[in-house]
Image (tube, rainbow, N blue to C red; front, side, top):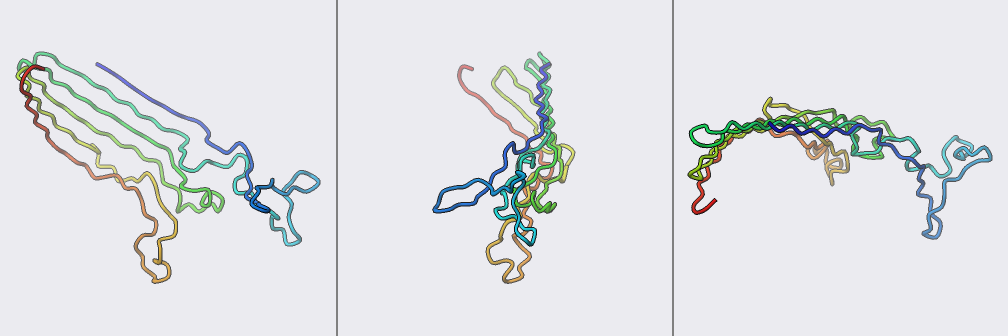
Amino acid sequence: MKLTANVFHGDPEFTNTVCTNTANDVSEDCVLDANGDFAVDDDGNFITPPVVIEGMTLPNSPKTTIHASVEYTIPNVFGGDLWFYYDYSYSSQIWNSIGNIRKNDRNGLAPEWSYSSLSAGLQLPNQLDIEVNIRNLFDDRGYSYVWTGEADNAELFDDPRYRQIRAVDRPRTVWVTVRKGFGDR
């Protein structure tokens, strides 16, 4: 039996404040007041609003990801090896862009998701291999990314397509593979 696991847990965030204030195509630092705070005008608006602020979440960076698998082989089944493989993947929620994070626009937040697959196969000494695969074993209906950008002229023509486009998990898929080798293995 073979077990594998990869786990990441962190707090992906920006460690610096970044501005895009430019003068003569040269990037300048954020304008700060005498107290070291971001300078604001008389209306309370940032003079040079920062693009990212230290401590802000990184886009496309989940806090937690997990991938685990188990593989098990039973020798001497019909003269060959019968094997089984199962895997599981998980990701916590993922923001899609700095803009959506700054506006706290939750339309740009893909929820957490998990996904599993199962395979089984028989490898015979005559080089005949038979394999059954089930992808998305539990038929999960999640999505791992959402796009909230401009959809060309969809807004202009009130076209509902191409908005909130999501990278949707494919539905459960089952297939069988049969392979036959010839010659020396």
